[in-house]
Amino acid sequence: MKAVVKTERTHGGVQVLDVPTPTIGENEVLVKIKNASICGSDVHAYHFAPTHHFIQPPVIMGHECSGEVAEVGAQVKDFKPGDRVVIEAINYCGKCESCLRGNRHICNEFQIRGMHRDGIFAEYVAVPPADLHKIPDSLSFEKACLVEPTSVLTHAVLDRSNIRAGDLVLVTGPGPIGILAAQMVKAVGAEPVVVGIDSDEEIRLPIARELGCQTINVSQQSITDALQELYGRQTVHAVLECSGASPIFQTTLDVVAKGGSITLIGLFAKPVEANLSIAVRKEITIYTSFASTWFDFERAIKMLDQGLIQTDKLVAYYDPEDAVQAFEDAIAKKVPKPVFRF
Ligand SMILES: [Zn+2]
Ligand SMILES: [Zn+2]
Image 1 (cartoon, rainbow, N blue to C red):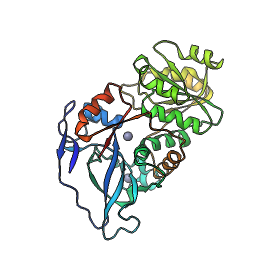
Image 2: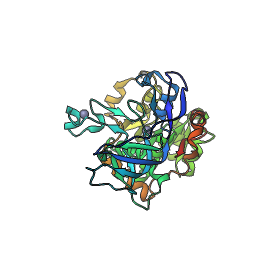
Image 3: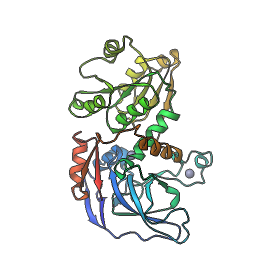
Image 4: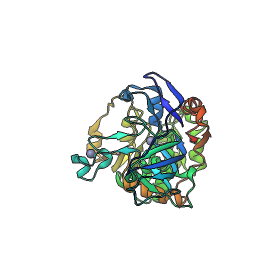
């Protein structure tokens, strides 16, 4: 079968290879992958950024997908061929203190598909049934492919912030996660303002505006000036930090209102320097949000199915043979979310 494989510990080093189709054990399910999308973290893996040097090629890449059950092992009771599914990205041990305390998504033995172990940029994947979620017939494979990234935002916005209906919320970074975050903010009745820079002006900020969000280009205007112009105030109630740009953290401390919250979602490329006394005096709550849980997958499926989260403006489709082009287009910010059709 065809698979997109990280083959070398270098920038790029990605090849489309013919690999053996997996065979399933008694308690495994063979999933035929329909759609699979490139995550920002896959781009880091493509670059072979220092944060991703733990990857040991050859590894089949990818963790965001939708598919159909092709075959089930003898012991599998809850799934049958033809079931439409999405696959969880994280592998957890189920035995460590984090898992036992109900935090499987931050398992001490945390592994993510496509990085620590083979992923889903392939025609077929063998997985345990516990890693699958059924999706309704009304939810297309194209939309369901974005369940995993959407689940990252149900986790961040619904559980790891104190955003309330009516709040003004700054979303820093207009990549796919930022655009999904802004829609999640709208879904809970709050108002998102999406922050980007000049290089986002061509594709990403226009998408945010098409989805009904106000935007600020910080290469052109300060956030406080823009807020004053848009809302007649200079602060926001909450921030969702989706850029990973280290200098933005101090700015978010400055613009969040007293008693407000900041949720850090992006991984910072460099250590952050900030005057935290400002956070103390304003009694700001600083949350972090990492990946997502079983429940977040279920919530993301429902929100996508209900049309609360739109994905069509984010995606462009590629043949897996053109994987290198898909990665290069993501890096060039031409396409927020390249999606393979397997
Ligand atoms: Zn991802
Ligand atoms: Zn664990």
